[in-house]
Length: 203
Length: 379
Image (cartoon, rainbow over all chains, first blue to last red; front, side, top):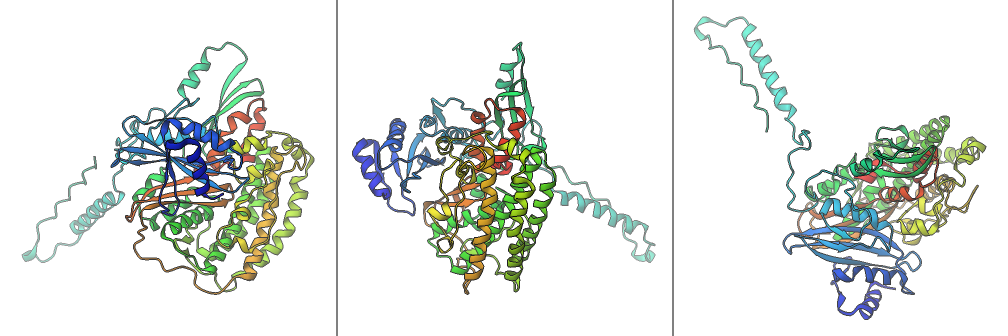
């Protein structure tokens, strides 16, 4: 079945809850209303002839301009070798989407990852914890407006450029050599070079 | 995690909470497992990952499209070719770019050689984890030979950065084909030696057969891919079933776990599927070298890679199973979103379920048989 045929069947079953298929910009997708996503997924898994048994990918994309976070579901059927891409739009200020963990177990960890990196809460998820970042991390890094906190528990995330320190040592050595060198003709005696100030550490 | 630990403190019985890792030789990288045990039997093992998280997906949004290619190597450093190829395929799909035939063949050859190298590490370390140290040395010896071949091709032994958007970086050097064929002649006989050395060793089979059984339904539902999925009896291989690149031109079999020494889906099946896959990879490389067409090794790619707005997903059969790249473009020189879906991350999700009732020693067999690589889970 092509993606168009699956989409038509989905549309016939759920009506307005399923948006139109995006114009074919390489891989098309369709937007599903957030409150119907679990129902839609459950139907896609069980409907004869469709049976999308493999949740290939579940991720999110942040769109601050439209003020939404899209949760993206890539679904595939091993038996029929077809698939569809679904999207759910959640409000950026308070993104909440129902969990599809009951449909595919694979969604459990992928939803945890989306929660961790985008801050989307999956309602009904049995174990919604951060998965990649530490439990006490502040913020959700894959959001477009994420600001780095400038370190974690005293571990800085910037360091001094080692080249700055090497250059300072070089200059000290050059100055030393100039001081030890035999003094040139007295008429052209230059003032001794002042050692350069050490590089200020970066904030 | 802290909550999990605190919950266990006031129990006054035989139960214990063990930290398995993060610095443990059998965890294949920096992984941690919180193991709830009752004597020698595990109640469950809760994976705690993220020690190697380097936010590669965020980096993908910051560097340009071609600039992300070396970073993909770091997603899975044991089998870096596949991450290269998957990312290249996704961007090529966005650019609607056709890859020259010779480049596709070189990609297939390099990937299959890399699969042999990766599976050698997998089966070798698995033997070590079980307690047999010698096989690892044999495996690493052969992997060195593969690394030499790949080094001659692209100059690197671990993080290859060989594939490019639109093709590959270098053509095969003169005389390389004969070197590869000589290695494959030697390697094919080695698989039988490997079987005699370790695969059908009575102790080894006892440790692996009927241990940590994953049913086919569970494997599909938990999103396992690659040898882990095939080990559970699912006859599915992207290279055969949704072929990409040069794969439609090759004939090969897909080994499926049918309960070689125990029931289908046990640790031994997952292990032995990998051993058989190495022989199939060798077959593919031979065919590709024989048919290797002349011509360009890369398509004409504009200096500034700027795909039209849109999104694409590419899927490749990596050594650790299906690897998918989801790339969103907003029409600028940088990707709006890069997502790498990896096999190891999802394989970690099933450990909590399968570990229930296993012996502590068998947790090592379970992790090794799933072939989990820490940078791939964490990215």
